[in-house]
Length: 259
Image 1 (cartoon, rainbow, N blue to C red):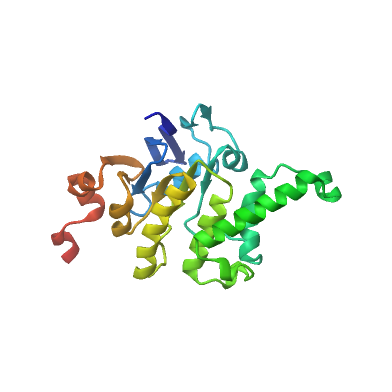
Image 2 (cartoon, one colour):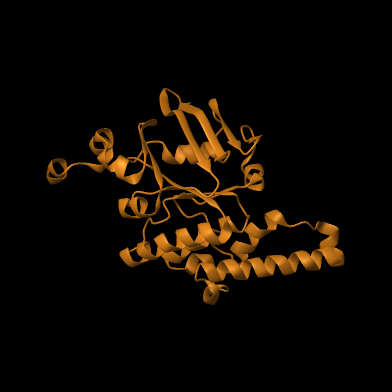
């Protein structure tokens, strides 16, 4: 299949530290892939490079036929790449509904004067945004909490709200940075099904960073493993689990875990 998101030979260094070196990854439309590695391996740095938080010093990021290098984060979001963050970045003092509405505004077609004069375009846009918000709140089990402030949500609900806000931008590619972080076992089980459902319902391609190997091995069809910014393995979950370099660097063996 043709590549939807193509990352080629991506590199960045901070001072003398090579955070990511010659990183390449291809996502075809509909893929659900994982990016794993020890803490400090460069996983979130890859997300930051793809979404314009950092500019690659070497390499190319391409969405379809469009090169994303040099674009700002809001331009990359408008192009069709959305993300969540390792640490929650919700608008804490806004309601759950308004957090999602902000994501929807990226695709709004009316301007200031249309809003002031409440034109037909404005009314139609507002109806579309309202319907989209309700759809996303229902999908993520947040309908009854729509009027609550985001900071008052339980942590698991905050993680789901971040996913809903990202999807509100109508992305082609969704980057999830540790979506299971801080969740209890039942929430993690529900998250697996939610991610699968989101891919089907919203026709979105997903790349996720996750430390919970139960989640990664269960839902990801292909996994890339980073260690000190270098790719040490790429393959199916079964292939990655058997890779000696991955075992040594990350997954561990019964002997090392017992020490």
